[in-house]
Each structure stands twice: as C-alpha cells, then as structure tokens.
Amino acid sequence: MKKTSLVAIPLVLFSLLVIFLFKGLFSDPRELDSQVKDKTLPTFSLPDLMQPDVTYTPEDLKGQVTILNVWGVWCVTCAVEMPYLTQLKNEQDVHIVGLYFDQDLDPDFGTKTLSRVQQEVTEMLSRYGNPYAYNIFDVYRDTSLDLGVTGAPEHFVIDANGVIRMHHIGDINERVWNTKVGPLYNKLVAQAAKAQGADAHIEVNAVMSDDKSAQGGLQ
Amino acid sequence: MKLLPAVSYVPPQYTSVNRLKNGFGLLTLALSMVTLLWVITAFSAHAAQDKFSFESPEQRESFLRLTAELRCPMCQNQNIADSDAMIAHDMRRKVYSLLKQGKTEQEVIAFMKSRYGDFVHYQPPVTAATLWLWAGPVLFIFIALIVVVRRKSVTPPEDMAAKLAKADEMLEREKE
Image 1 (cartoon, rainbow over the protein chains, first blue to last red):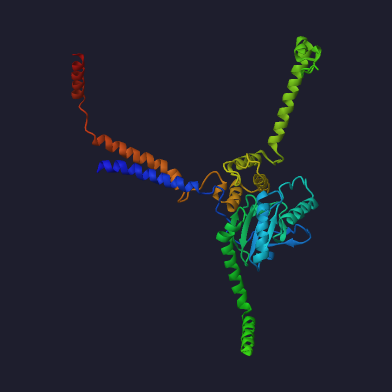
Image 2: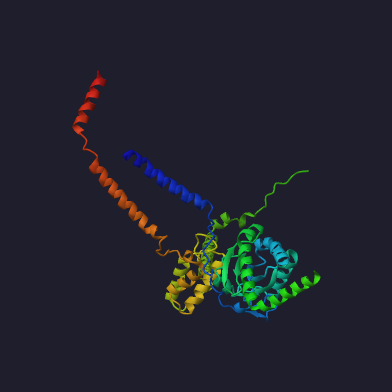
C-alpha cells in the first residue's frame, strides 16, 4: 500500500507536469485575451487617409458588418495578406476598412509629410490590390492604443451595431478565414440581414408574390 | 614587378609614443581624454532623459516607476522603459501625457490594463488562476513538513549498538 503510493504520487505529478508543458508547446505567447471584445468601439474622430478633410467616427462603421484591418506600408505581413483580402472583397463582397498607422511618423517630430505617406500607400495598394472600402488614418496611434493593438496586422470583426466581436492578431489567410474569421463574419452578416429583413419584410413579400404570379403565368 | 607591402608610413614625430616622450604631449593626451569622457557622459545623460520633461521630481519618479512596471505587449519580457518597439514608444508617451493630466499611478495602470489586460502589468493580481503562485510554495512547504514529521515518527529507532557490534564483527572477520 505504501509502496504503490510512493510510486503513484510522483508519477501523477510528473504526468501533470508533462501535460502542462505539452500544452505550452502549442500556446501562442503573443495571444492576449482582448479587452475590447464584445464592447463598442472606443470613441474616435479621425481623418480619411486619402482625403484628410473627411472625418470618421464610430458611427460610420455602424449599419454594416466590418472587418477593421490595422495595417501600414512598413508591415511585411500586411503585404502578404493583401492579395487574399482583395480576393475576399472581390469574390465574397467582404467589407474591409483599413485603420492605417505609420511607424515613421513620430507625432512629436513630424518627420514625414502626409503626401509622402499617401504616395507610399497608393504604391503598395496598386502593387498588391486594394481590399479597403476606405482607410482611417490613426495619426497619433491613440485609437490603436485604445483598441489594444500591439502591432500589425491585426483585425477586428465589428458587427452592424458597432460592437467588436473578434480581435484577431496576425494575418488573415485562407485557413484563418475558413476556420476562424469567415464563419463569424458570415454569421454576423446573416444576422444583420435578418434584422434588416424585419424592416423590409413587406417589400420582400410583395416581390415573392410577384414571383409566384409570374411563375403561375408561365405555367 | 615588385609587390609593395601595404603599410602606411607614419612620420615618427606624429606617433603617440613619441608624443608621450615629451611632457607636453602627455598633457594634451590627458586633456583630450578628459574632454572625451565629459562629452560621452553629457551625451548619455541626455539620452537617458529622452524627451520628456517633468513638473516635479515626484512626477519624474512616477514615470520611471511606471515605465519599469508596465510590460511591453509586443516584445515579451521587456518593460516599456527598455523596449524600443513602437508600441512601447506610444505607451511611454501615453504614460507621460496621463501623468501630465494629473492622473495617479494607479489610474495609469488601470488605463493600460483596460486596454491590454493584466498581462501589461508586472504585478499580477490575485485571481483564481494566479492564486497558486502564492499558495503553491506555502502549500508545498506545509505538505513537506507533514511528510517529514510523519516519517520520523513512523520509522523505528535504529539500534545503533547492535549495528556497531555487527560491523566490528565483520571487521574482525576481514582481519583473519
């Protein structure tokens, strides 16, 4: 009896340690539990990257499911994912908005002019494709800080009510889209359509009855 | 054709050894070294100051303490004072501006935690998951103590005299 416990206790402890360390092998140390998930967007008022006289607020992101993509021309992974994002936009009509911030643009020194940034952005988008409906320019990187952004690329899936439903750190490729981001996006789009459908219910009915009568007419 | 060795010729009067030979050269050398040291220290002091200026020494202390205590979310295991990542720059700037607004240290920490989670602060709060960091060692010592005490009482006292006699006997046998 005593002998078995003498063997069993270290064995159990050892296997617990092994399980703990084994799990550690596959955990991503950069994965943080996002603090903004299921919260509304932090308030901001930021200019459009290409037309600085246009200003965006969180209100502009309501009414449509959006993927907010944090990026910059200096970010290599962003360039890698850009063709795929463009494909998503073209083939599945995914609504992607860019939150652009510049690394070299030190707000305290103002080393880089806006036109220079715009030129670089235009160059990059013409090379890899433009997935963005528009780009919000996070001049002082304050909004990125409020969103808990640690680098680029990062993505926020925002539902039609302006609530952040997912914070994805890293790029979106085919695998990530099919397993993680895509399902949620499509679900949210369906929900939004249903909510809108409630308003447009009568209209849809009218169209359907029209359809039926047209079919009846054919027969 | 003769290959020339690649050695640059230095006239003897310009070598440092020659300069050292007369007192004047030694003095200039010492002076220039002092100047160099002064320049280096002046520069490093400037670098340490960064570009933040504070209203009071207390505010400066708070800033230094906070940047040492807050962890960079991008580069693991560096505080934002050490890190040169962009996010660390931005966080330093934010800490500075929050302190300038008159926020307390706790408020600044809460501000960062609300954005980056408990991860961002090097002092983890006591929660169900982190409780074991404190309870674990105490529990370990406690259990070990129990085991040690139990063992002592269970093991029968050894008959040292009998053992010694036996050893003596064996020694005797060896001798023969």
